[in-house]
Length: 243
Image (cartoon, rainbow, N blue to C red; front, side, top):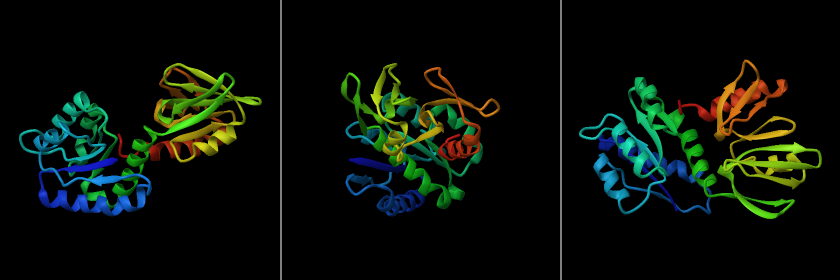
């Protein structure tokens, strides 16, 4: 079950956005996923009351609201309901930098919602699905199952490739990195050089001056000169509106 909700103190806008999400989900949520669009919430209190009994996977959240504003609610969600993906939806573009403290998945501008919403929803759904999706690997030590979101990168080693995970574990598999690239193409991976396929969600910093990516595990991996432009564009697209 994938649960999506809207919280905005403007009932008319909240209703319109909810209806738009219903339309878009028909295109961006796979048929095998049971998707529920909740009736719109108009206050933080309503959201927290619902979360005390049920879960929300994706929340489109207004910022300027009476009593408890969107930032305050996001702070509570980060502490108590960290699995809820937050997408701020605001008419105030200047709030984008303040939103960083709450690690939102996206920051959407109400004036540009028609353009920004489809892609943001698509990526949010993909992220939620990836968090529960797995990759079955035949390693040199036997068959294992790894969550997609736990994989940092793959490195090619002649007739083998290694799988580096967020836990620090490294697995060695027989095969080509090209075959792995095919298996992970619907996720946020990018082949930055012939021998390396990285998970963009685990990038800490991109050093375009020195053509390298700094991964969250401390690894610094160089980007092929022929791939720099394509990678920068791909990475910028994947993080657009999130910063």
